[in-house]
View 1: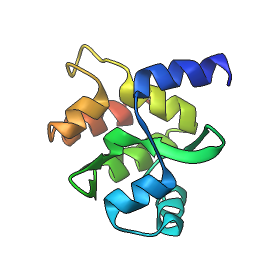
View 2: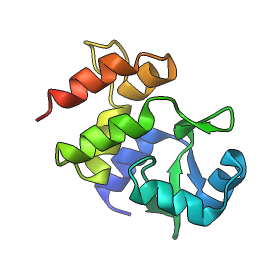
View 3: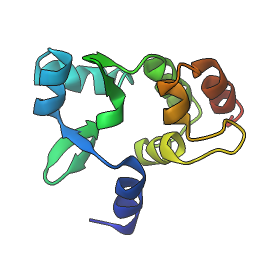
Amino acid sequence: MTRNDRDTDALVGEWLPIGAAAKKLNVSPNRIKQFIREHKLLGVQRGGELAIPAAFVVNGNILKGLPGTLTLLSDCGLTTDEALRWLFTSDDSLPGSPIEALTEDRGTEVRRRAQALV
């Protein structure tokens, strides 16, 4: 595991292997992989398997506002690791991290900041 991986893990906290994520979202693991390809989720290799941040799943659904935000971050040219770090790093202008703001249904504020990355 690289230093960047450790730094990202420290920010993200809990990871869900795709099998566990699939159960929580009541879909197949292949559907999770499709969500990752479509920028509805971000997935990385952790412990030898593909995993997503646990914060991306709320009450059996993908966190509201996350797919649009991930598309914006991708359009801005951020890599998966850069997008994860951006989502989970505290931003005094929000306040809190973008993922916390999404959880609190403040997606518009998050997307405005994502658009400013261009």
